[in-house]
Image (cartoon, rainbow, N blue to C red; front, side, top):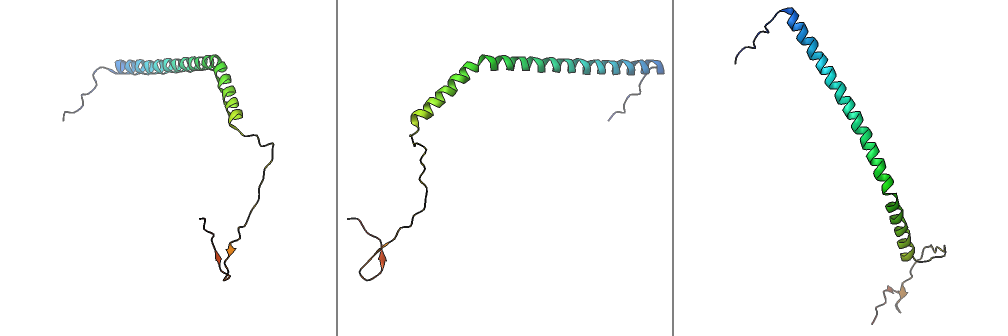
Length: 103
């Protein structure tokens, strides 16, 4: 493995290279943030436009679902029958309980 080369040049060129590198890094970060902000705004605008253009389709789908539910539901007039029951087994002549068998 070869050792890393020593930086050449005097102190002035090293400081200048550091300042230029930092400036390029800051400029790149700044432009990327601006690009991300523009992309976010464009995405919101495009999403809002799509939402606005599909509102009639959503309204029609909701009306279709309402009609379908109305057509398939049974009218119950609001009456709910709820309760519990107990089944009594038939008694045989000897007093035992047995299940009735159908012929």
